[in-house]
Amino acid sequence: MGNISENFVEIKESIPAGVSLIAISKTKSNEEIMEVYHCGHRLFGESKAQELVPKHEELPRDIEWHMVGHLQSNKVKYIAPFVSMIHSVDSAKLLKTINKEGKKNHRVIDCLLQMHIAEEETKFGLDYEELSGLLASEEFKKMENVRIRGLMCMATYTDDTEQVSREFRQLVKYFEQAKSVFFPQDEMFSIKSMGMSDDYEIAIQEGSNMVRVGSKIFGTR
Image (tube, rainbow, N blue to C red; front, side, top):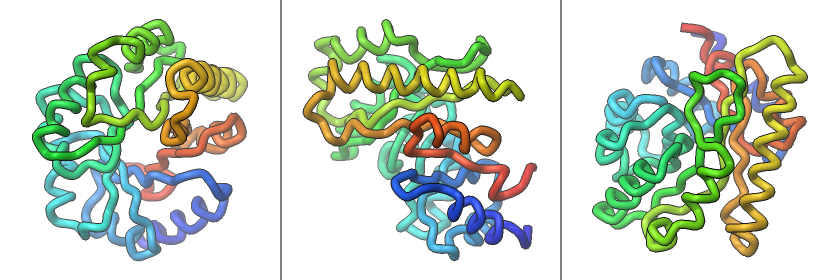
């Protein structure tokens, strides 16, 4: 555990200006999270609502919590009062629920739409046709309590770096298409959240401006 702050500093220094680092703290203790916090970092990511809520209550209030894991609609209400950004919006139904809970909490909740770019069938996410359908729908246009900030993806878990690069390029292509069609004047639609501990360097080369790094900071479980 003693190396957490050193790991963090090393990663932070390797990331170019303009790329946000989300420290993925799922399964990690409050003490471990505070090691990174004391390095001046405030962006942390969790993948389960039931783990995120107690951490939000127990840890400093200036932490910006990002929900990065697959989110079930019935769990949105627990994180809607405080979550900084939801990365894993993969259906119109989920977005509708986030909008409803945002309204209840008098908040506009920042969201990323999760795209399916991996060759693995197990990864969640929208294809471009589903993305277009959602963004073009009248239902979406009436949503006042969500703000789409960009797209998120997870690449295939493989040693084939060319495949990983290709998948990240696909996300960038989707981002540029969505930007030109649906968000041409919207400067807030700007995030390409791609890259994790094993592939964040490739992701940055391919245009990522937000990476989600856990085990390279905190060590494996």
